[in-house]
Length: 295
Image (tube, rainbow, N blue to C red; front, side, top):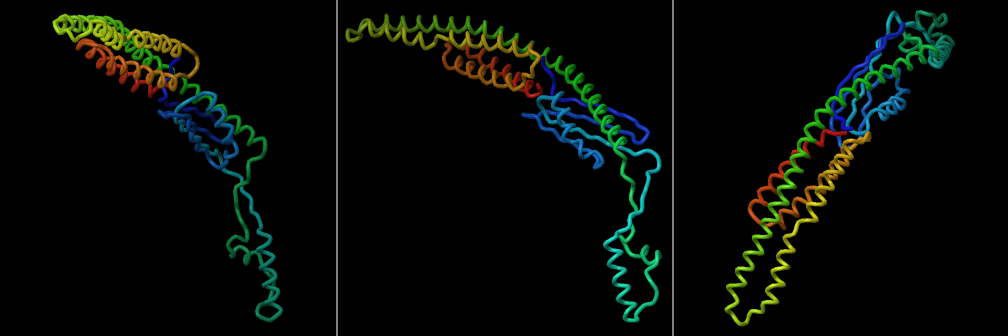
C-alpha cells in the first residue's frame, strides 16, 4: 500500500481538570524524524508518545504538539524557605546581642524578604496525573489515526499517478524492443553492404570482416536490459501492492531502472530508439519526483 508522507490532523480531550489539544503534522523526510512539543507537566510522557508515533508512521518528519489548559482555579500552597528563615533568625539574634535591634523576627519581616515564603500551585495528585496521562495518549492516538487516514487517501492519488506512469514505461519498453531490433537489423545491413563494397580489395579477409559484423551486432543487442526493465516493473507492482512501507525501496528500484535505460541508450542503434530512451528517462524522473512523497 502506498501512503503519502504529508498530512495533518488534530485530536482533543477534556477532563474536569484540563483541556487537551493535539496537532500532528507530517512532511517528507528521508528517514523517520519525530519532533515532540509538550508542556512541562507532561514531560515524563514524551518517550511513550514517541513510541505511539512509531506505531503509526514509518518514514517522514513528524511534528507532534500537545497543549494542556488547566480548568478552574488552581490550588495553591505557601511554602516556608527553612534554610533562608534559619539564616535570617541567626542574623537577627546576633544583631540583638549587639544591641543593634530589639525584638524578634515577625511574620511581616519574613514577607518582606524575597523567597522567604514561596507561593506555588499545588502539584496534581497521582490519580489526577494518571487520568491526564491516559487522556493525552488517547488524544494523540486519535490525531494519528486521522493522520493515517489522510495519508492513505493521498497515497491512493499517488498510486494512481505512479501506476499510469509505469504503464507508460512498460509501453516504451515494448516500443524500444521493436526500435532496437530494427536499428540492429539496419546496422547489420549497412555493414554487409560495406563488406560487399570492400570485396574488390584483395587484402580484405571476408572471415575477419564477418566476425566484426557479428561483434557489432552483439554490442547492440539490448535483450538483457529490456528483460531486467520488465522485471523491475513487475517488482514495482509487488512493492506497491504490499502492506509494508515501500517508498525507499521504490527509490532504489528507480535507480536500477535508470541504469538499464542509460545502458539502452548507449547500446541501442537508430534515431527512433534514441528518442524513446529520452522519453523513458523523462518518465522515470517524474516517477522519482513522486516517489519522494511516498512513505
